Image 1 (cartoon, rainbow, N blue to C red):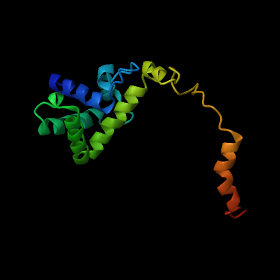
Image 2 (cartoon, one colour):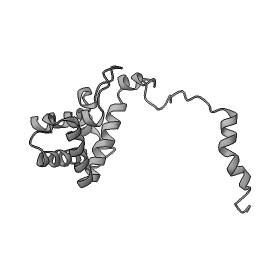
Image 3 (cartoon, helix red, strand yellow):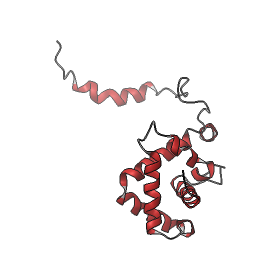
Length: 149
């Protein structure tokens, strides 16, 4: 699927998209193995491998060794690639987040249940009555704007 060079580059790119937070022990996306999720995401993107390869090719065309660049240089290069290849880059970003936050060990690091969102769902605290009142007051103040049939 990925050549060794593409795999190393992809891991470095994923680590830039979702970097590690060593203070709280949150791993980066590349280090967590999100690259393995990307080819399986055909339900979410028509050609995830093609999109990833297009982004990697753009990076390779712009830099002889992305992994050796400083952080600021990496970000600038990724912004250029995003501008020139918005659809494929957007697909990579979307699938990276999906792959990363679908991992039970990651969800639990952020205080969200390790189980999948469905069918159980997550506990969401109810908004206060005062907040809901302030939120809906402008709509109720307008009155009816529809025709009763």
